[in-house]
Structure formats: structure tokens, C-alpha cells
Image 1 (cartoon, helix red, strand yellow):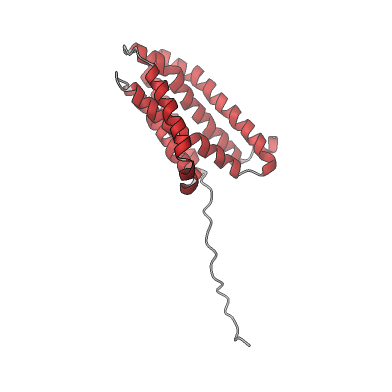
Image 2 (spheres, helix red, strand yellow):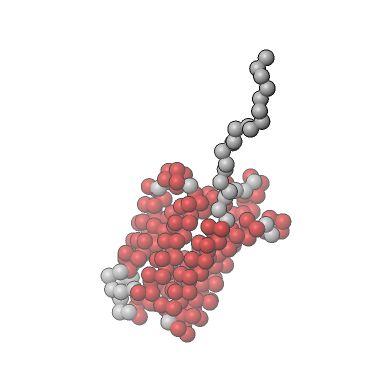
Length: 198
């Protein structure tokens, strides 16, 4: 496990998943108290819309993820994650369900795409360990969002906590882009001159 953990590719995966957990935690931990502080009393719209779009994204886009590419979908959906978290700073009455729907779409695309990407890059005997590391990283990010962003929200307010979470998520997008799999180059025709055919 220690050899696996120190690989640059594994460390990048842990970083991306921890950022994902932080963004997820920021939304689900703070959307309710923030909405209540703005006078919004109907909170269930966020979770209902999130659930519906997350399920729909998984059911309807599985083939598209494979066709377009898991890395590309991971980058796009984590970018959407960041934008939704940043959008929470400007929450207004009537927006909660729409933000929940966008967040569900981002989650419904990112989770299967990035999980598959992690698995396909690993040797068969390492896949279980990588999934364990991924779950641990997500939990760590979730815990960090509660502790660190909770302190930010208490000191500077909920909008600033969402701003910090969104910017951290954008940093995760940068890390994800930097760890793109190498493109396979087409085989070049041989340039060695051939002798006369006998």
C-alpha cells in the first residue's frame, strides 16, 4: 500500500477526490443554514432536484461517458461542481431547486466517470486498494469541509465559505487536467528504405 500511495498518479487521485469531498460537504453541510439565514423556508427542493438529476445523469449518460471519454467528462463535471459551489454565494429565494439540479448533474456525471477512470488506470491487483484510498480521501475532504469551512463561515459568513470551497474545487480541476492520460500516437509508417523486390 505504501508503494502505491507514493506514486504521483495516486497522489493526484487522492487530491482530486479530497477536493471533490470538500465541495460535496460544503453544499450539503451549509446550504440549509445559509438558506434559512436568507429567509428561505422551503429547503427540500434542493435535495429533491439534486437526487432526480443525479439519478437521471447516471442512467441517461453512461454510454456518452464512454464515447466522449472518462477524463474529459471528469474535467467538465468537476468544473460544473466548482461553478455550482461558487453560485451558492448569490443564493436567492427561488434558486435553491435550480442549484440543486445543477449540483446533481455534476455529481451524477463526475462520480461514475472519475471512478471508472481510476479503475482503468490501475493494475487489477491494485484496484481494491485504490478504491479504499479514494473512499478515505473523499471522507477526509468531507471532514475538512465541515471543520475548515465551518470556521470560515463563522468568521466571514456562508458566502465566503462557498467561495473558498469553489476555488479549491477549481484547483482540483487544474490538477485533473494536469494528470490527463497521454494520448496514443498513431503508428508512423517505417521510413527505412526498402530494397528491390526479388
